[in-house]
Amino acid sequence: MSAHDLITENHVDGTVPEGLRVIPDFVDKEAAEGIQKWTRALMMNSCHCQEYDGMRYVWCGKPGYLEVMPKWSIDVRRRLMDAGVFSEMPNSLFVIRYQSGASFAPHVDEIFYGPAIAGLSLGAACEMPMVHTITGEQTRVFLPERSMYVLNGEEARFIWKHGIPPAVSGTFRGQPWQQTKPRFSYTFRLF
Ligand SMILES: O=C(O)CCC(=O)C(=O)O
Image: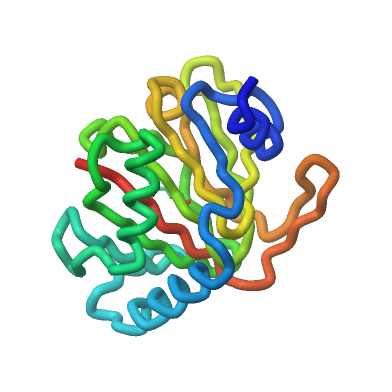
């Protein structure tokens, strides 16, 4: 078992879908602050943003070219490529701000989004449950602030749904967590 497997297992309660990885501290505190500063400015400009059920979101790069990919993302995207998650630099970034209690229904990302999805979490921590589309088996995934999750490989990417429930607090492996600030997610794709 590699260190990577152990890291992921610490963040999963249940079966680990093949191709799921959770990498804590993917960005350091200083980088996280810079990214959040950029995000706050972007989110204030409402002509770039859309709203849905407590979520405010923006696509950067593909699709739509609402914004060019941000400068800070170059390092993150390069590291994802170097880690073998993507074959090239991801060309799409989907940024979401979740207000307290906002949720994203369980789903499998469309096939045209490519074989890998990677998501950075900033602000509040959350759980991202996964559900097997055939057996209904559920597994709990915990995403701390500054962690990166990766869904690639057939199982994690296409056989298990993922989503963000409206929970604002909970206990994961005996550790309580609570959202006292909004959560921001940054989803990278190559398509
Ligand atoms: O908030 C998240 O990290 C999940 C985002 C997501 O599921 C998606 O963009 O498809």
